[in-house]
Each structure stands twice: as C-alpha cells, then as structure tokens.
Image 1 (spheres, protein in one colour):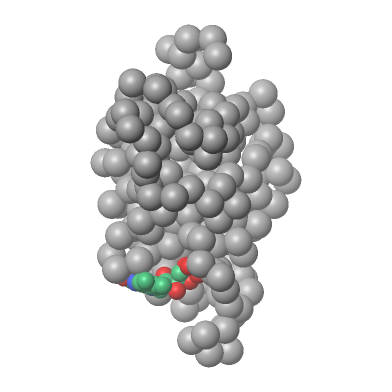
Image 2 (tube, rainbow, N blue to C red; image 1 turned 120 degrees about the vertical axis):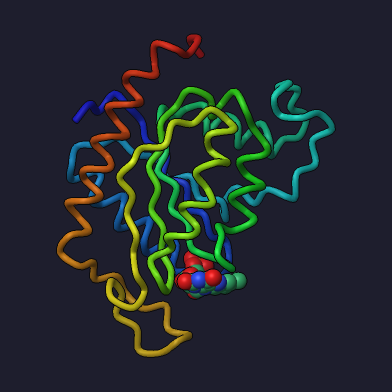
Length: 194
Ligand SMILES: Cc1cc2nc3c(=O)[nH]c(=O)nc-3n(C[C@H](O)[C@H](O)[C@H](O)COP(=O)(O)O)c2cc1C
C-alpha cells in the first residue's frame, strides 16, 4: 500500500458514551497493519459550533479560528474514511456541519465509508454519498457496515460494549482502503500543490 497517502479517519459521532471511538480505533488498527498512513480527525475534539462563517466555504474566506484549525487538518489529508453511525436513518448532524465548513480542502480527494448501527448503518452511508459528491469527494464502492447486533458484544442497550467484527469485515475494510488509496493517488494529479 502507498504510505505516502495520508488517510484522515473522520470520527463522526460526538456524544459522550459513543461507540464511534471503538469503531474508529478498529479502522485505525486494521489500516495501520495494512500499511496505511492514517490520522484521526475526531469531530468531538474539533468541537465545531454550528456553521458560523459569514461566507460560503466555496469562497475560502475563512475567518474563525476553529475553521482554520479544521481546514488545516483536512488539507493535510489525501483521502478520508468517514466513520458514521446511523441517527434517524441518516448520518449525524455533526458530520454535515463539519463538511459544510470547507470546500477546497475536500475537493478531488477520495473517501471510503464505514457505517455502524442496529442494521449496520447502511442508511447513514447512503445518505452521506451525495453530500460527499457535492464537495468533490470521490467515494469508493466498497463500504463497511458494522452491525451492533452481530459485530459488537453488548450486555444491554446502554452498554457501549466492544467490537468483535464478523470474519468478513476485516477483508472488506482492507479492500475498501486499497480502493481509497488507489483513487487518492490518481486524484493527486488534479489538485493544485498545497
Ligand atoms: C439520535 C439517535 C438516533 C438513532 N437512530 C438510529 C437509526 O435510525 N437506525 C439505527 O440502526 N440505529 C440508530 N441509533 C442507534 C445508533 O446507531 C447506535 O446507538 C450507535 O452506537 C450510535 O453511534 P455513537 O454511539 O457513536 O453515537 C440511533 C442512536 C441515536 C443516538
């Protein structure tokens, strides 16, 4: 795998007691063991308020310190893996807000999607794809759907639990990462030097 491609793992849930950190840790471990260079972009740590920039992101006139911090982190990545839970048949508002803050930093980069939820987060992943397209992110076909009923061990509905992925999950994640890195390498030629 091309380790010159930096993959930002976007942790898409921000609530206390979230399972997002557990899923993102698994993604990071598998990616690093596969030879990928990864960086964690934890939305809880960036703590972005609801979009408060006067100009639309497409103009690039960022004024707020939190926007500049977020923009620098995203600009430093060639590709992304979005780790998103399913909330009410979609992805969390925090993810949409974080995407809306930027434009050029996303454009002509590749992404893979990891959903999780009671039914694998499939609807969160499908809802995210058209949003990524609008900011110029090329999202690969292979997706990972972590099912809380079969890929987690939970002792009850409020237990954060631990991830025990079914046998097919790791090879699927590796295949998705291969696609992301291949597309990110191809897209580099389209991007102006940073
Ligand atoms: C606001 C909210 C809405 C949810 N809606 C769904 C849903 O529509 N479908 C689903 O499969 N799970 C749903 N769930 C369950 C979550 O997918 C599950 O709790 C998951 O752990 C949430 O990710 P997090 O722990 O990282 O926040 C919902 C959870 C929350 C908090």
